[in-house]
Length: 480
Image (tube, rainbow, N blue to C red; front, side, top):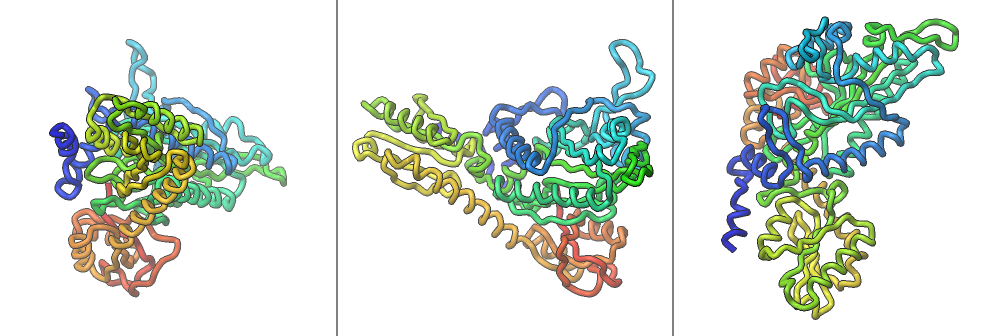
């Protein structure tokens, strides 16, 4: 049992040191490994399997809205990137450049894609000719490189995995509607599949994506009270189309510029799953996204009939349509339980000699550790109900945490007090001046505008910072 105890103690308590707890979970659950080049990570099977689940779920949702998958090149010529000046200015500090091909210096530097708006526009400038060609609603699953100075697994790395959707439309309204539609797709996915509630809204001018007219964001709240930007959807208007000469002949036989959107979600969402749902024993994965939903653990498996019964349960669970595995190792039960909890599998099924004699097994939920004794023959029928209850309970718990850590403030002093006493989101009125954003950030030790919600509350008539007439209610918070 000493080994069992040591295994659990290897994780730092969340309340003692949240950053170290996060690193411990990522390593002990075997999600990520480091490499010799800082900021470039190995996605281990446990970590990549979660991303595969996210990809499959999102890809289905995308295709239901008419999205088609494509793949564009990794490298972007510098001259192409320079065509949209606001865009390139926004990414210039993070760009990685290829300067040589083999032993020869290239005549032009090539950017390793930080995002692909420019490549998509170059492509569309060649293939869009008529209004009949539109809309083009594309998505690609790929990796991108952004040369971050400070890196953390999933949350911020120099190379990360994501999907980036890009669309071109004939009208302003159609493009704007697609921007909002994809924001809703993300909200549904994060809420229903990941059991994570978000605040949603529009970014302020200083926080929006480089080159966009409007950026819509989904902001989740982590257990330490910091926000995590979980997905974004951008409306570009016709700015990129004009820069890249994406024109088409409309129904009146007149040349028009197209209207563009882009939208993305990356592997940082795995960091959100860890930090919203995890506990001091490791990962807690929402059933809808868990790669393995059930682990069968035989107890005293050397006793007659136990292992055969455990294997029979495994097959019955799989036959019912649930992903499952079994731990047949000779480790002590306590070690098996600790390992199961560390990797976050939603349910474990225990069966030992006494259970076998009674014709029952014990189903244990990972989130609450609630135990339910079930007749062996009834296990396949009960699993679905228990998993759905767990999924909803996990969302409700996260939503209650979000609500409890969202406050209002009418002055910077009150905002500072709220953030220190109860870290989370603070709702406050804002005049619209970026100078006030900067002052609030400085005065509060890093709180930034997270978003302007679509439905704004009226907290007061004046800006929380300068006292001038307020234009918007804004969610403020410290963020990753």
